[in-house]
Structures are given as C-alpha cells and as structure tokens.
Length: 203
Picture 1 (cartoon, rainbow, N blue to C red):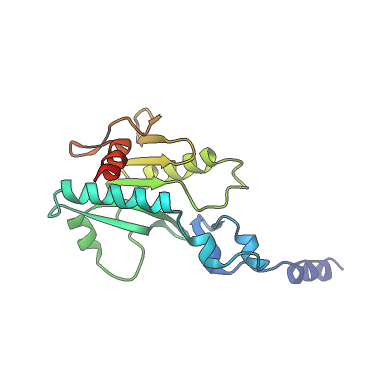
Picture 2 (cartoon, rainbow, N blue to C red):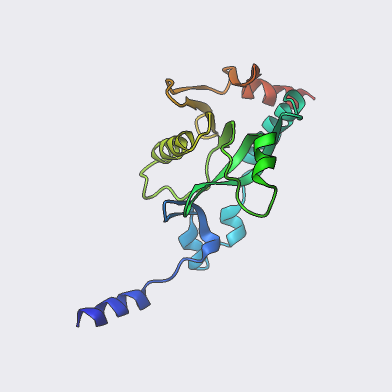
C-alpha cells in the first residue's frame, strides 16, 4: 500500500528540466528565479535566464575597467556566468571571475567547468530562486562562504536594488558599503562603481 502511494506521488510531481537549474550545491539544485512559471508556460526559459539592462551594463563596465588595468600576462577574466566546480555535484555561476592564468592553463582549457579557484569573484544581483532562502542576503552569504571555502580569495557583490556592495575575504571582516565607495579589488586595483557609471554617462 505504501509503495503504491509513493509511486502515485512520484507520478504527480512534475520533473524540473535541468535547463532550469541555476546552480548546484552538494547535490541540491538551486533553480532560476520564476522557474515554476516556465514549467506552467507563463514565461520562457530565455526570460528567466536573461539579465536586466542595468545588470549587464554594470558587468560590462567592471569587465572593461579590469581588462584595462590588470596584468593580462598574469590574469584572465571570465564573464557570462562562468561555471566553477570545486566538489562533486557542486557548482556556482560567476558573473565576473579573475583567474591566475598559469593555474587555469595548467588545469586545461576544455569544455568543463573551471576547478581552479578564482582570485576574485564579482557578482551583480542574482538570477537564483530565493524562496527557500527567505531573502537575498541569506543566499548571498551562503554562496559567498562557499566560494571562500573553495579557495576564492575575495568576493565582491554589488546589488542594484539598494546600491550596496558587500566585500568578503576569508578570515577577514566582511563589510557592506555603498556604490560610491572605492573598493580594492586586488593588486592595488581600486574600483568605484558610481564613478564608473557617472563617467560613462558623460562620455
């Protein structure tokens, strides 16, 4: 009798397509925001996977700034939700990730997710479904801690809904400040997002 009930429950559940999995944490999927609306046909896959104009513009500005200032013989910058996998059935998408070029090349350039920890990760908002987390900060803290535990040296997180930036380093004090504050990214490279936006508007 119990076996029949379990079989009925399995049949009653709609399987979530793997395309709607945003990230995976130790075998537990984190879905795209509004993934259930895609299953119901209310939204398309492209709608939930896409970035807002503000999000992709910020990524473009930060990437452009970094590529002008870093030592490209020493570092390589990944964007476009670069996959980083550090444990079985565990991976995260990264908006901007700065890698040590030699370490990445030694790992091998192939069609798999990077396993070399980035030196720095910069995130802008998230596309993750946050309902099981309660709010954005619970998700951001978990992802940030995962990345630091995996060997990432610094995580910088910009949020568009309140124009804040969170900076986290392992074994150091995390802090939250405003977009107009100047943040040291790495190797004496400093970034002021508000200033970048203002300069872009004037150009």
